[in-house]
Length: 76
Image (tube, rainbow, N blue to C red; front, side, top):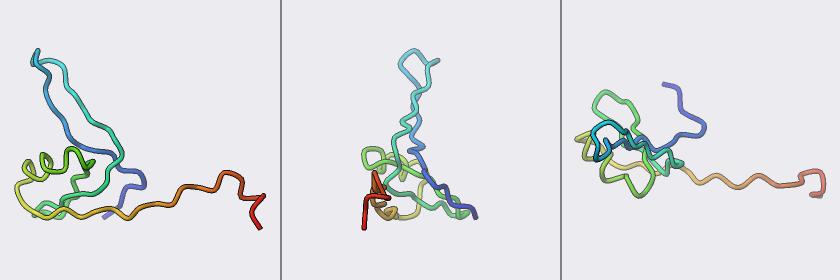
């Protein structure tokens, strides 16, 4: 299975007018694995909603990434 390098939150909602689709798209902080082994990524705000939609599995937090050094040539 291929892991995403920069996964985003998969939370989706239909707007009040039943035509507009709202997608979160925030950087994912973890994922829920469904019974088939597929990962469903979510931000912290929508983790419970994504977990309820998948129906099973546990929340697995993604490792934190260190920020890139702004000027690596200036570092010793």
